[in-house]
Image (cartoon, rainbow, N blue to C red):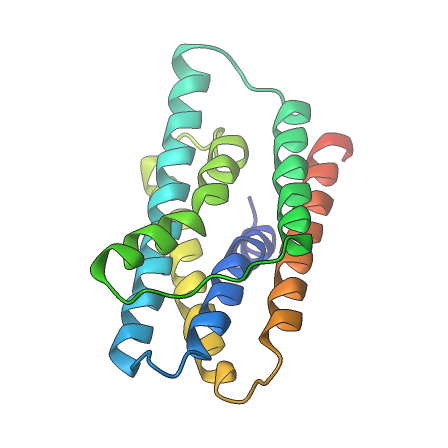
Length: 183
């Protein structure tokens, strides 16, 4: 996968974390330290889920069977459609600032990364390339989460922004899935 495609995937996967970070950033009881811990959590779990998914896909292809591009594209398009559907859902959740929330939110915004890793990075034969791509996705997520916290200081209408983040991320994944299936 070239760097451009990897960057587009990283951005698409990071938009969930971006939307959640915007929401968290508007909560007045969240301190700078908490914001940094959330950003680190989002980046780490995005990396971890991508790596686990990619390595699982590699092992699946090596020892069980080859996963065709069409199936992978369909799964990615499905994840994108699911993200768009999440954008329509009304999310009114109150943030609880305890240690578990860093894990819960970190994993919840990163589950789609495992699916994308499984389907897109399963042909990579080098563990170093899988690790590098996963780290890249984690770093992009970390940076976008920090940017979201900075932007959240200036935003007044978070519901609108969160919905668009889900839609944009979902649309990008649907397009990428279609690209995998047909091109």
